[in-house]
Structure formats: structure tokens, C-alpha cells
Length: 329
Image (cartoon, rainbow, N blue to C red; front, top):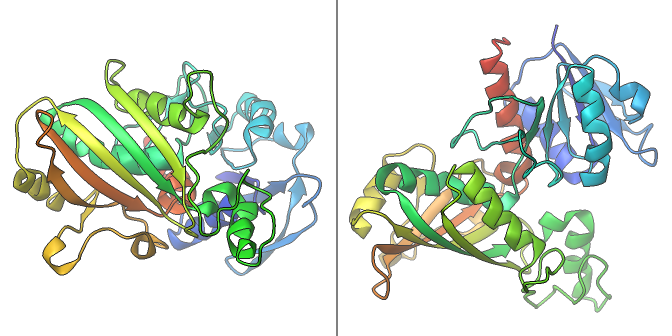
């Protein structure tokens, strides 16, 4: 008997988790849905059955679960994930709370697998997830010395309020999710600013990339930007490799690897687009170019659905990965 909980089940990512569990036909025997007190009592349809969402309390988290998909925010996860863990559950957390905690696995299933020193597994930052998938392909083939990111992140990464700011900004309404209008605008600002001028989002990408790729010496820098796009993040990566290669060799490498989808035919205006990756599971790469100003350096453009591979899908894939490791059928 496999008992699964989804915490934050009424939120944007929580609902995507349920959709993904259904679509991928993940096998379990019992499902319990949790939310904050504000959303408790709501009814959610799943696989032909109506579930009443329960309030997440310490007593509820102390009940025996096998697995928990946690999408309820950092402070909620900080409090409740250890309670679930203590009661015997493996918790897969979508917040930033545990990602850089020593002993906590930070997992992208195409890249690494958990060792489970703790029974909390962290889901990485959305932009990091889609970026490390092609980076792992390059790392295995050539080794990587340096990565410079520039992200173009969709408003759905800010939840419902971010989407509302974009939609209602066209009518002149003041933003609620952002410090400036996002409609017809670009914000070089995601999360809070740190003392060195980087934002917390940028620092997340730097730290998480090193941890996932298991290379503390890897040189990583990032600029994270919010753009007026509904869904799917786009990321430009400037990647310096340890070995010499060519654009054609990298294209062939990506084309033969089922972890990414290569879309790179500029003569026909074919390259990864946010509107094409939205609603899809895959990570798309293209616009591969050699940087003639730096040795062994190449540009890679990458798009992926931030609510799927960048959040809900990756969490469900981790669940499947752990179930397989544990022999759950």
C-alpha cells in the first residue's frame, strides 16, 4: 500500500503536480491533499474521484505517508517537511528551503539520483533544472570550465499574481507581484538583491548548478530577467568547455541524446521558442554558436515549460525515480 500526499494541492504548481501524476499514470493506493487553512475544504477532481482538501497541520503531517510532494512555500516546508520525514515519508520539496542544505539531495533525474542521507529531496530552481540537463550532456562529453547564464523568465514563475500583473497591466493596473509593471516591460530583477548586487535568484542558479553537476570549482555567473511571457522560461548559456569541439559536433551530440530536443535550423527560422515548449515535457536547445572571443566557448539557447519540467514534472519524475530505487511498483 503506497500512500501519497500532495501539500499545496490548490496552488498553481500543486495542480500541475496532480495533472502530471494523472498523465504519467503514477501508481499509488491512497492520495491525501493538503493546503493552508484558507483553501482547506476545497474540492479537487482527480481520476474520476472528488477529494476534499485538508488543512496541513502538525497532526496531519505526523500520520504515516510513503511519499509527499510539497509545494507549499519555503516557510511551510521548513516547518512541516521534517515532521513528514520523522513520520517516515520521503518528501520531495519544490521550494528553495532545502536546496543547499548539506545532506539534502538536489535532483534532476536526467542528471543525478538521490542518495537519501535525509528523506527530504529538493527540487531545484526552475531555470536551473532546464539548464543543467543540456549542461550535463556537455559535461559528460567535454567537461565544463565556465557557464554564464542570462534567463528570460515567464510571469507564471511568480504564481497567479504574476500572471495577473501581465494580464491587467494592459489596462494600466498597478502591479502586485513586481516592483514595476511587467506589461510591455522587462525587469532585470528576480527575488531580493544581495549585498554584492546579484539577486537571490541568480545566486540560486550559481550554487545549484555546482551542486547538481558535482563541481564546486565550476565558474558560474548569472543574470535573471523577468519578461512579459505567460509560460516557459528561456535561458541563454555561454559555456566554456575543457576540450575543443565544433558546433556540428555539439549539434550531433544533442541530436542523439534523448534528454534534450534539438531545434537548430536558423536558415528556416527554426529555434526553441517559449510558445512551443509550453505544455511540453521536453527541454529544447538550439542556436548553438561558437564564441570567437573566448577559447572553447559556445552559446546555447534553451527553453522549457517552467511549471512542468521547471517544477511539477521534475518533482513527479523524482517521485518515480525514488519509487524505482525503493522497488515500489
